[in-house]
Image 1 (cartoon, rainbow, N blue to C red):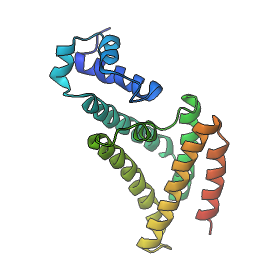
Image 2 (cartoon, helix red, strand yellow; image 1 turned 90 degrees about the vertical axis):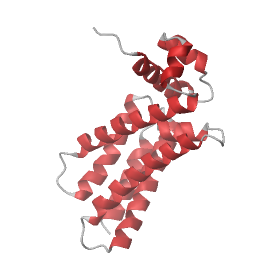
Image 3 (tube, rainbow, N blue to C red; image 1 turned 135 degrees about the vertical axis):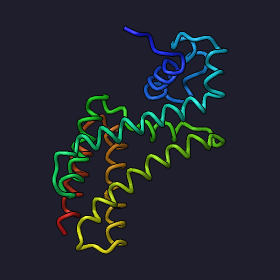
Image 4 (cartoon, rainbow, N blue to C red; image 1 turned 180 degrees about the horizontal axis):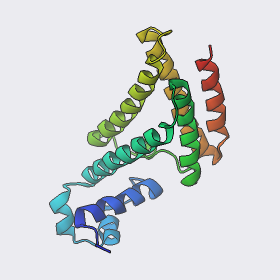
Length: 187
């Protein structure tokens, strides 16, 4: 088995630590030690802990969105894709023990001056928001503004379900949010 390169090991280690322990609770020295890299090697690839976090979030975005797209790909219409996104949340959050969203977690644990992390978090949430809005726009009964508004309402349901399931350590918030979404889509 080929050993990962230095940059890859740093990102993998930081990803695990940031997600499970928190951004502020994870130090550079811990990342260096657990990734088994030299400090000089780490600084060849990343100028700061914030830069490592951005790499973590970029990777998390790609993986999370691809997993979501794969999960809903078997659905043929937009309503079923939207509703399946709640099933994806349930599957994913159950698998991670209701640890929650890495983007929500890091943004709540962030010093004010970490603008690169904030920008990456906003990017992820805006891509998800646009995807939902674009799905709703497939239904020609809605004007563009109506579809965007309904998409935003669904986005709030998704994000709220993630957070409340993390607090409750249970799937019921996701299932209730899915029920509300189904009612919105059937109006």
